[in-house]
Image 1 (tube, rainbow, N blue to C red):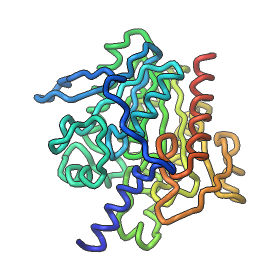
Image 2 (image 1 turned 135 degrees about the vertical axis):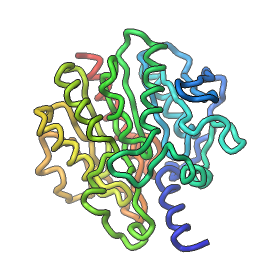
Image 3 (image 1 turned 90 degrees about the vertical axis):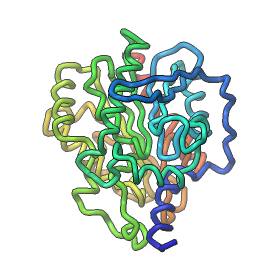
Length: 321
């Protein structure tokens, strides 16, 4: 295997497989309901799981390793916060012969993502047809939960996807967690090279979708966005959030986006961004590929717990409005 291939694999696994200090066991399937759904325009059914307790609807989009044990554990925690969590497999079910439930194989995901025309991993302007599929899942959840405001959460590979569906009626909160698209190329990771400024700031969401989102946000003051990130993440530049803030500032919507950020001690990142960034220091040592992933499975449990506490605070503040 070439150095290039090895490095790219490390990138994709580093995005998702650094479990915090202990291995997360796969929760029992009986804790979730399963639905087999054939989305409009598709010939084969896909799978979506839902936590069992009734609550406020939340669409949770998985990272590259799929409906993993840590991802399922996070859904169960959200259930205790009063949410009913929907988790579609964006890879289908089964995945290369294995059940999508508990799937945690980023190396295998790499193989079919490279061949799957729905995903465009290196396009800073459009992540591909998978965005339209995410919109179809959003509408399906809305049909299951009529009249209820919906929160959509993306993570890593799907980190910016909630932006593609926030304009939908009933979707009121988009949570962006450590968006990774467009992904860095192997030589950029291996040699610690930055992406081009355009790629660093690229959201992977088409311009027309963003313009529609801005127009809809003007019409509906309840629609908001919260992003979670590490300021010095070597895999996913935080410049995407700067670009997002500038976009909303240009559209007189700057107060509708807030970023929650961990930074290196002594960093001045938040000094000039204090009006839209909530920041704290991380003690996790900076490594080649980490820290990465915020609310699901970073290497540091302290970091993960801080992000989740901030997430819960933001969700609670929305309930109080």
